[in-house]
Figure 1 (cartoon, rainbow, N blue to C red):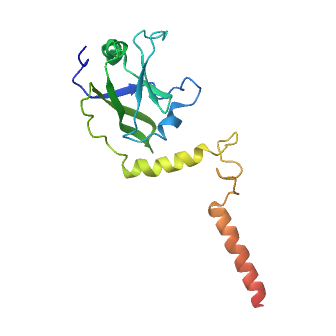
Figure 2: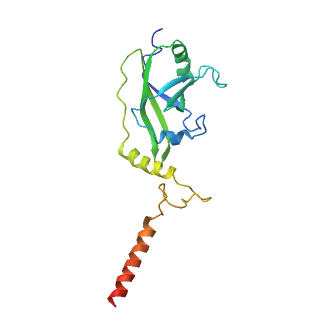
Figure 3: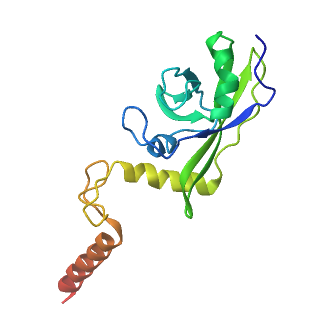
Length: 176
């Protein structure tokens, strides 16, 4: 069987839902890098689409191929046609566009994958904050509680201000 399409870059869908193990796919996508390898997994028993094709990163599903693309690819995957796939581009993940979207590149039968698009500077900055926040707990109001992800006490501006006041007061006391 020949490659099902000449097109090489595809949007994935379902990124805002949870993975099958319950992990929010948005949390997974915050850790994915453009260029990371992905695999395609047929799901013929999927109740929503018998042609369903899940996109897996590190063994976790980060989304699906669209219904139209899955219909074109299912026969090739069922026949064992060889392919290579990787994350081509991540969209969003920044202020004003907090949710991630993803595109993957697929090359069939030994063909070359197109060059992927790296994260831009704003995405990189935003991602560092998102990953750090994932390890912290929030209270009912949504504010962070306790220490940081490593269990250290919170610092922040208030901690620095209190430190300056205490050091200043101690210095003033020793001066008098």
